[in-house]
Image 1 (cartoon, rainbow, N blue to C red):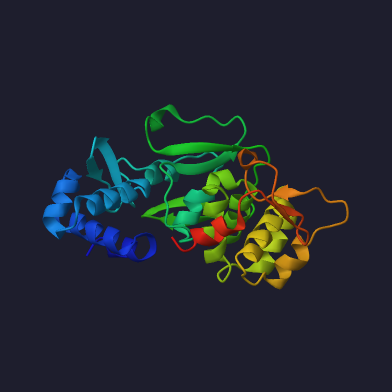
Image 2 (tube, rainbow, N blue to C red):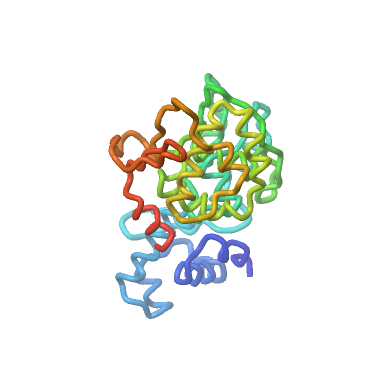
Length: 276
């Protein structure tokens, strides 16, 4: 079935049932009533499942309670899709942050637009119109740790797994905050080449801060911090504290002295995020 490649990585059980049904029946619009009619669920369960699918990018809300399915070879995007546009774009760029994390299977949540990293001053082509692509301007734009990959049938440049981890940890707001970063770190710990990540972190201006934040999150989650990361991320004398989440969370919280990272979000919130 066409939907099978997506369900194991990005969907819960109820969500997978709805996606499989949509792939088979190809309805133009769906709502809670149609889901109740097919599966016999309560209206509340149907509405909640549809809202989650919309957040993850599998549905597009058209009007109150009604949704348009976004399925098929475009990777969940309605045609024309962003991958075709990026594949033909000649400017230096790479897909990064939460968009790359989603494609690498590090998070089940797909951003509403493809996060495309570019140098400061780069403008969006007019021909893109309303394509779901957002430019992320980086003051220190660098291509290290990126490569051209086949994504949904198109060749696009994307940050590799190690670069994705570092970028998401450098700007947590681009990865769903510290809670989203916790999911990404949890899934990436066993898959990353940590020696390669440390070497990459040394080459990037934000690499050390990102490595400290990754180590701190692993510590809070009671996960083993890989030895190359632990050695590189250990706090140095006089090093300024780093906050585990953005400034909107405030500046108070427990300080992990090993990494000089302040937990300005309750540690239990990070742990609970992995259980939801």
